[in-house]
Image (tube, rainbow, N blue to C red; front, side, top):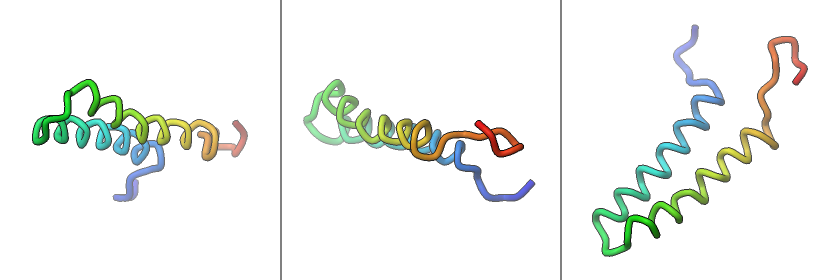
Length: 64
């Protein structure tokens, strides 16, 4: 097992990070939480789209 995170780990981390940053943005500014989380969901959705359609998971034999 290597110390590097795998691509699915990075995708999950990017989803959590974008929502966390949106939440922090709502706390430190006057933006409402709903607006901030709505804005944060856009890059999170992009991460999901990337993981599902551009770089989909494959089985160990190389087939989907």
